Image (cartoon, rainbow, N blue to C red):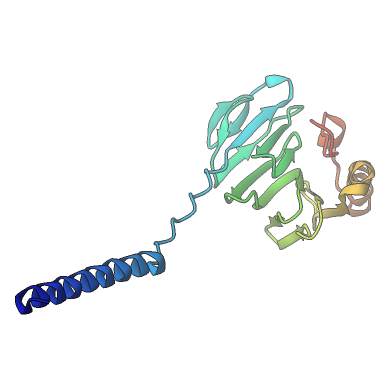
Length: 209
């Protein structure tokens, strides 16, 4: 073989070997490259919607509102005589407010709620993994168990020395509503407290007000 041609052939072989090695290296890097994880989209903010009995107005943060109003966390809610309301937290939990009740409600995007009951009656119902807590001026009155569906009813009428609390699992929630009303009446009688709101349309049972 001609020495010049031999050198040219060797040079071409070396060039081809180098090119193949570069391609192989590029493919290997492409396979081992770790793509950045795409963060999961943030859950949409929970929407708390009010429904009032007979679509009649109640007071939220000093304004009169009716069914369909959006309730924000930290709202101060006051119901008049004979008119109650329900706040639905995205289907995860809800709060039923009896007539003649004043409270503040706080909640998060998971449907967890904390209610500060000033007076009257409020009933919270939650799904599993959701917590509802009701406080009074005396501290925590009750809290649901996140391990199961929860039912928590608290009544703290004016003049009462302590709140009446009923906690039940979902299976017994239907019977618990009547228990709350009976407990409020008996508790009021025992404490010497008159409870006119109980007989003027209060409906703290788990059924819609």
